[in-house]
Amino acid sequence: MAEQEKVYPRFTLVQRLEHWVMAISFTMLCLTGLPQSYPLTTWGDWIIGTLGGIETVRIIHRVSAIGFMLVLLFHTIAVFYRIYVKRVRLTMLPTLKDATDLLDSVRYQLGLIQQPPKLPRYTFAEKMEYWAVIWGGVIMVITGFMLWNPIATTRFFPGEFVPAAKAAHGAEALLAFLAIIIWHFYWVHLKIFNRSIFTGYLTRQQMLHEHAAELEEIESGRIPPPPPPDVRLRRERIFTPVASIVTAVGLVSLYGFVTFEQTAITTVPPAETVVAFLPATPTPTPTPTPTPVPTPTVPGQEIQATQEVASGDAPLITHPIGGREDCLECHALDGMLPFPKNHEGWPVSTCTVCHSTEQENPPPPAVQHKIEGREDCLKCHELDTLPDSHQEANFTSEDCMICHRPEDEAVAQNEAEETPAQAEESATSEAEAAAPVGEVSFAQDLLPLLQENCETCHGEIAMGDLNVTSYEALAKGGANGPSFVPGSPDESIIVKTMQGEHRRKLEGQDLQKLIAWIAAGAENN
Image 1 (spheres, rainbow, N blue to C red):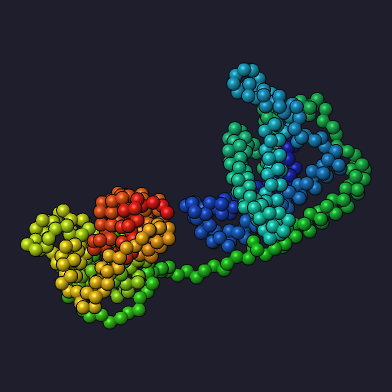
Image 2 (cartoon, rainbow, N blue to C red):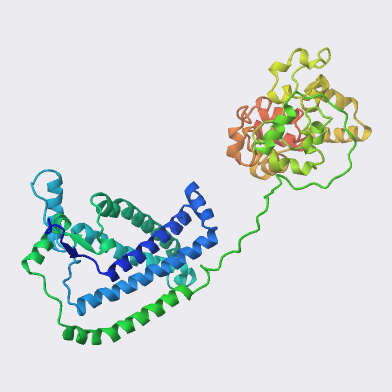
């Protein structure tokens, strides 16, 4: 029993202190670095807020980075001290036995062999973890310098190196964090709780289980003895000045690393905590308005509209804007489709800030029958057959004529109300129309006319799927089919449209050019 309680030295006090400084700096780097890599996550935002905000987190991260680099510098000096002065064996270097130990460990776990391999002072798992810390630390220092001093980096490397360093820095940090949590904690806390980092010693039973090969070397006396005091002193006299110079160079380099630029440390001062407010539309200038006559509205209509605008889901404008720029004609509080009360006082210029247009919608269809004797539109077009936007409004039959124009009645009304000046102009147009137009070129004669008169609606917008800015687009036509039938002006949709009550159309000699061109075969000349 007394033999089993015998202990063997594992770590010196200096090595244990070095480990704990490294552990603290690594923990703080992960605690302050990972939230900066994932700031939009709930846990990242909570950690940043708990630590005092992003400015505080960045300062803690950089102070921890300085501690991490100091530990790396100290460890480098300490390793060379043990190698040169104490002449210890290079037990941390990978050897062929590590590969065989790894293979035998796998075979033992699979039940292929009866006994586990006898492991040396530092096992293959410990060596893998140690060298992962070394090369990971080098990567973090190099990429950290690029992020800490981006201007200096871009003086020697392309600008793409900075975001590349950010990606590598964050990926290596996540890898190191997962390696510690999954790998290191399992080997030293879960598989067997190793107390040597606290006490500095291992019991014989622990040595037999974890480092049986080293235990055999110790008990058989094959471990080289430490150097005599006089030899050790002579070596220290050589090592000390060299180590002092290396330490000084390292500290100066670290100081330059930290103070090379001010771009990373200097951050925006914490903003004053205020209640954020951003109006959905420009604040209108209050103007006195007359008290509107109350108009009954559909229950819940105003509440629904208010909720839609507040949520950013404002109703679309489902008709063309041209000719109806004054929204208040229909959507004033006393109009047929009133806006919500909280919109009162807003100028027309603010309507399209929230309410976008659907340019692909065609104009409201014209009334295809005589109005006389059928003035009551709702008699045939009952509310339940109308669009939703019409059902929610207090439309009357008189309101229908605002958008839906009866074609025949409009022509008759225009003819009845023609003034002498208009009659003279009409006679002139008829005379011009009757004059021969000769040979018509599409590119030189028609295309400029179409671009001038029709491109606004039938250009890039292509209302009704019709584009008139090229021969191919015009020949393709729109939602109603091909625009023209070569050789047959009377059967061509574009001619019928121009001869009807279209808002903008070709007239007189210009219309005759179009008719003559189609009659001649509508070639792309």
